Length: 120
Image 1 (tube, rainbow, N blue to C red):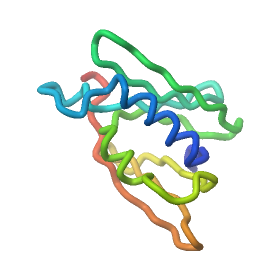
Image 2: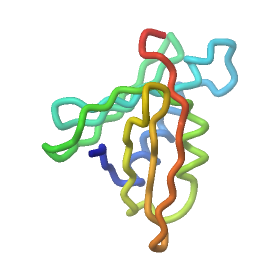
Image 3: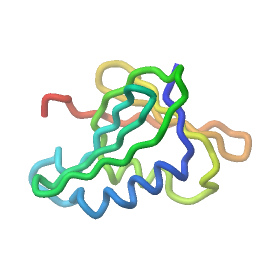
Image 4: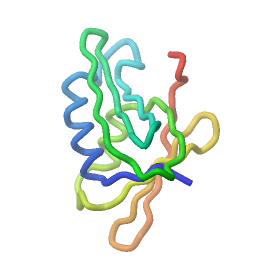
């Protein structure tokens, strides 16, 4: 089971978060976003230690719990271009990775993203 959202929603979230999350930083955690699902809501958060931004998307009731920290630039690169109406799926893949998948022109595209530890 996975967490599914429209690609357009993730694109909007990452565009706004890019104004807060710094790609070039000495603290790797500040180049990342937290993706968390709970209470039928997916929250994507980022900070530069002075500002904090949350983007929330409603989820269906049967979505699985998800809580991970992923590099913003890696996510932006994966979802760049194409049709925003495509659905994206997030799914934990072991303790150190989250799998993001989407279907484009009838082909399923998947990518594993290394995640950071939540206590960072």
